[in-house]
Image (cartoon, rainbow, N blue to C red; front, side, top):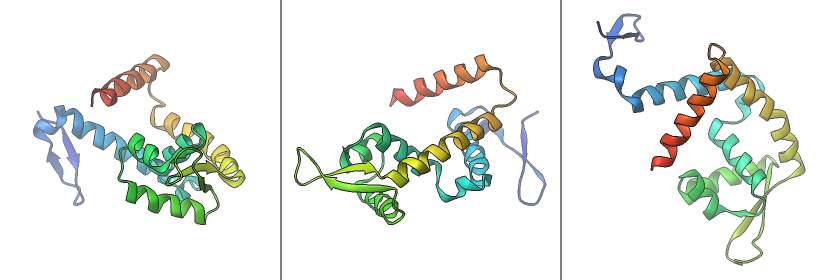
Length: 153
């Protein structure tokens, strides 16, 4: 019998081939992770994608917006809007790039560093919540497989 899932009217639906499609299951897993992330009181001030950008800026001080957009696989214009919001919140600052005068170098502010220090443990807590029924070996294997899948592109 095919796996079923509840829809908005609480009647079970047949997932059919979706049950065995990696992309579908990845999207469902990501949705579950993001929904759990949003439930955390402090984390509702940032999305998982924004968190990832802040971590990349933190780990690569002076990174250009172009390099960050490429690393994250998002449009430069979209990233520009996100960086604008980070600047408004006092988390990130743009500085003239040391090599390319046309580019901006991105840096976390002191407030951005403090914000990230507060959020990181909550993000790990979210991961732990979502994988509490996994053994440590299973968690490591899942990470290994996801990294392998991500690097395929």
